[in-house]
Image 1 (cartoon, rainbow, N blue to C red):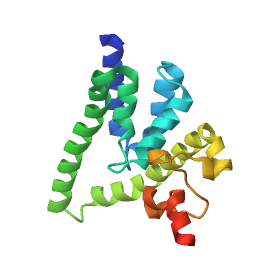
Image 2: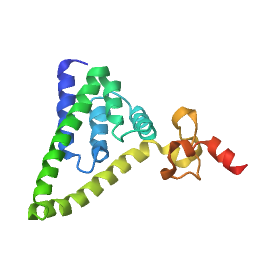
Image 3: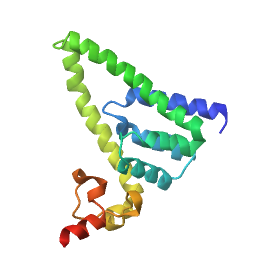
Image 4: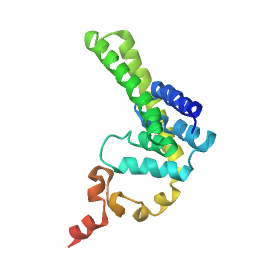
Length: 176
């Protein structure tokens, strides 16, 4: 990957950081469009696998962003995808938090909170809509969904139990 492509990746993810109201999963469809459909840096299956791997691993739910950067351009890609999403969002969060603490009943703050809620929900639904067809086999046969350490999930497991309790070994011990 040349510097121009790396710069374009950085600028695109910087733009997405300002649209990521409600978290980075809200801009997942556009990340997919840019990386898979526009530039063909990876396939849809690779993208879905990176996203699933990052969601199963412990830690923040933005772990898929450095993985996308690593797949595209190694360490330079990690920096080009992670920094533009963390630095502006962190700065804006600190600024808005400071202003909200000083003026909690400001009309602008109340209007922003009311107006951004439906946008966030819509963007999150769009993320699910984009991700579902890419992992169709996992929706039909949930026992074959890959998990950390080569284990697989079961129909009985719930999302709240986490990856350790969703492995087949835990359910086998529970039945005894």
